[in-house]
Structure formats: C-alpha cells, structure tokens
Image: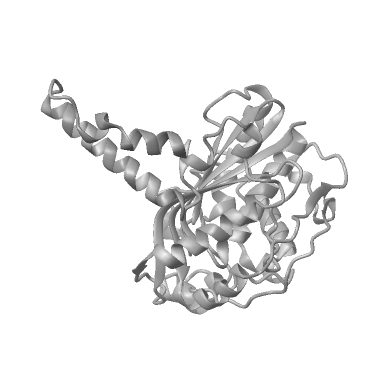
Length: 352
C-alpha cells in the first residue's frame, strides 16, 4: 500500500494537473497531493495511520495477539517526540496530540499491559462498582482501591463548591449514567430503582435481540449533570458491534492520561466486552480505543521512557470461572487472570 501511494505521488498527474481541468479541480488535486505527502511522512514514525490496517492479509489488519501493547507504547513515544506542550486545570503541563486510535485483538489474550504492573484488582472492582450504578468512592476505598479517593476527598469537593455533599459522593458519574441516565440525582445514599434510562440493560438487550443495530451505544456524557459531577467523564461513550459470533467494542475517550489512565481504561473496557460477550453467548473480538486529547504529563516523561525500554512479555488470558446470565450477578471471584508476568511497578503521580 505504501508503494502504491509513493508511486501515485511521483506520477505526473498529481504533480502536473492536465490543463483541461478547471481551477477547482486543480486545487483539489493539490490538496490531495499535500495530504498524501503528510500521510507518507508520518507512516514511518507514527504507526496509527490507515496504512497499518489497509492490507490484503486479514491477519495483519489486527495487531498480533501478544504484541498489541506495542501500539500503546508507540503512541506514547510519538506523543513525547511530537506532542504540543499545553497547560490544563491540574497545574501540571502535558505533551498532547489530538486524535489517536489503537486497536486491540482480545480474542485469545487480554490487554493487561506487561511493561509495568497494572492494578488488575482495582480494574475489576471499579467495573463492578460502575455496573452497580454506585457513585460512592468510599465503597472502593473500603476494598483498598484508592483510585477515586482524591476526587471524593473533602478538600476536592469543597474546591468545587460541593460543601453540603458528603465525602466520597462523586455526584452522577459513570455508574449513575450507565444505569439511570436522565434521572434526578440527589446523593450517593438515595435509592434510584428503575428511574432514568438503564443504558447497560438496553445495550445487552440490543445485542441479544437486534445485533446488527448501529445504535448499541452507552454514554456517560450528560450535559445536564456535568455541573454536579466531581469529575466529568474521561471515557465518554462506547459502542458495541456484533459480527460472526464476536462482540467488539469501540470506546471514545475525550481525555487520555497515557501514563496512568490509559492502561487502566484499555483493560477496563476489554473486561466489560468480555462480560457482555459472556452473558450474550458471544466471543470477544476487538477493543478499539479512540482518543481525543491524548497526553503525557511532563512529570511522567522520565518514568515512561523507562517503560519504553522494557521488553514486551506475552499478554495474559482472562477466564470467567462460572456461567453468568445477568450482568448484575458477576462477583469478583468469577474472574481469573492467567499467566500475567509483568515487569515491576513504575511510580507516576496522578494530576488532580
């Protein structure tokens, strides 16, 4: 494919448009030539161009099962080399690129990255917490999972003006939107029953009964509720796709912390895909991760350079230990990660 485009660029047709073409057509060809030049120049350094996927060999369209992590590492390397330095609400600058996409083959391996140890139990507990519709960060804290502690702290809530809100009450964040979209949020102790739209239930129902539907979507982005949230959703929405007995998921993430957040997010939505595939009698297919503002915090650059030097290990597999038919019936002991042999932990501080 690269040779095709290279030949096309060298052709006299692109460099010297025929005189019979009108000016608008000539301008269009000039723009096409520029775009192709940019695409070709990026293809050597940036592995996420369409050229990586447009191939006649289907096995090469998807990353090798045990080297999918390389896509993530390549993205980090590209951001460090080419990202724009930007300020943000946290006070810690980032190097940022807008618009990236990575595809993970989750058919036979699970994308729990190996170049540093990823907190699997935290991923699992958080996903079950989302599914319960909970917005109480204390529930995770009590299980020794502290990923939401800072956003639910008294000082953080007070800084946002939530003086009357109890510590740990995050507002109508992910789980509430997944299970009660549109309902009126009061606090984390209230019972919401069947109020609002249960998007997760609707997704599963569509996968079972109308698998070709192009509207199998779940969104955490509710503009009416954003002012009530301790943190607006970073992973905004996901769409599911059924084909040849496989379930794939694409997630759009508006803000992607490549060092800390993205390894968590990749495993989290891959886990959700496994869970939904299990209860709908499908097999997991692909997880496609689409990023808006993909960034590396400047205080993560050196730790990430260490990670980039580490050798890839084979990815683990995920086993679901018993037959579950209802998404609400999953328990933490239902899941087993097999042959996870990562490198050691790399310390990176979270920007709040």
